[in-house]
Image (cartoon, rainbow, N blue to C red; front, side):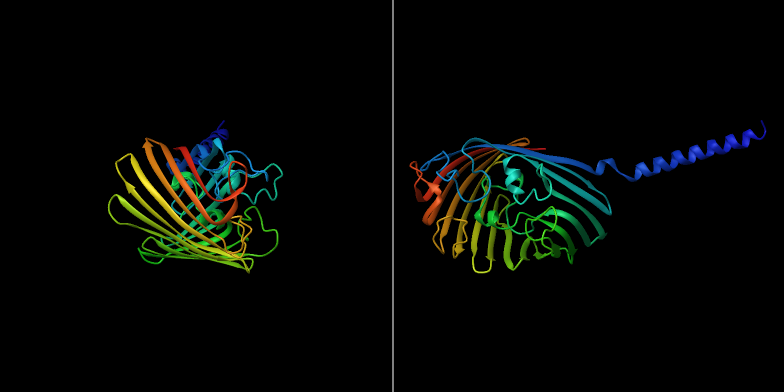
Length: 350
């Protein structure tokens, strides 16, 4: 019995020590730093001067930009984002489901035969207060607009956004040089090849930021793009955004500029306009005219009415091209130079 007592005391002490160790490890992970967010969106779309049915090529009469291009009542996507924001490290897992999500990850699946739902998937390390490394799949740093409809004022997207990159997979380093000046450098797979690298080539990116204005550069497989994104709060209720880009694709490419004036008319209603000029070099294919050096002017007027987490967005859009476009077809499915359309979108963010 005397021999068993010290052993029992040792086991009890070991159990208490192990319990304290487990509790200590659990407390390191702060559950309050876990975040779960996302959105769902759906819309109605109709053309005023064109067909609302599929064309003879199996396409729908819609602007040649991405998303919000299906006729009648249509689905956007469900977006689910899980993240952890630690003091030194964290992660983001961003999943998308639905037509908008499918269009956003158009270069996938490359590996999985069952499809890909990953919009972003990355981990990051705050090396210092002014230096962060990010590793994985992240949305592009170029352009004014993004994939998620919650972060764009206009529901439909621009040509500049649609024909720039959507996402990258690689490693990037973000430097906060001063309170106003930042620098980002990145090495990545070729543009939009997000699951793995199929050809052993790499893309290189850089971003220089100053007081909310960003100059971006991307080089990928013999192509390059220079992009400026910025904006100014002219008053407490009036914002003016700017995006300009030039892309060279070894003989064909594009350039353009888009302006985004937005005004808050009340606490729940805002009005925004996007005016965009987009021009192809040679027959890049974005306007789908089959004619070299075509251009298009797109004017989009969007209202934004907020009801708690729900946002209702009515939108009028006019696209006018220099030549007949196969994206703009009349009721007889013949190409025409312009297309006017209406969209009513509902977006819920959580």
